[in-house]
Length: 298
Image (cartoon, rainbow, N blue to C red; front, side):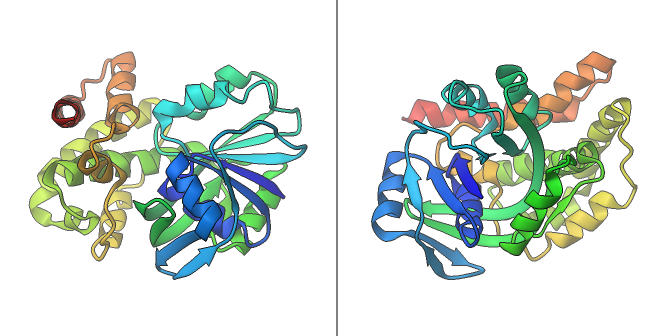
């Protein structure tokens, strides 16, 4: 299968590397990262230590027939990234949005219209972008792919490449579960500057409960029912995690975060249903304040 990974950051690079086992993969990323990959290969450290030889480019100039575009950019880059390629997209192109956030695939669908199939994916994958050409692989627990007639083939391909993939029975539930987890882990770890395992600290339980309760109230208005022990199970799974959340990584690197598409999305959707989400709104304001401090330092 021909696969173009649009957004070769930490997650995109890892997925591209793993998928290159069985597929013709091209990574699309920033110049320095691309140059390093083309010269020395993509080095994956952590859970495995291996260098992958694959093609990397900074810009898509042509899309071949039957190409899968794996969209792994930050959500705030979706509009620009898809507008840049919309005239190259063919009817048999498939776009799989493998990102954080709530309903961000709709941004893509609004631009693409009926030009090609757009699917949502959800992953729980811990990665760190160490430097151009080198990505640390910390953990991977699953890759859920929205149900469609082609999804089984995609999932089987991904699974054979070690990405623990399956076809989701309800991608909306998977998306909300990941969102709620992100709304809790990302801002707390970014504000406290702690590894993900720190989220299991029981002293944070009151704050975690407030965040989650607001999210669940909004999710219920969307027809989503979250089982009572979901968050407890998830937090337990992070007890030994040395991974740094993507938001923490963005803050320490002075980059913009995805807070608007996580806690911010819950707040905005809450307004639609008349549900106040003061805790999530407060977290949005704190993270935006941290972003502004970073910008002022530059």
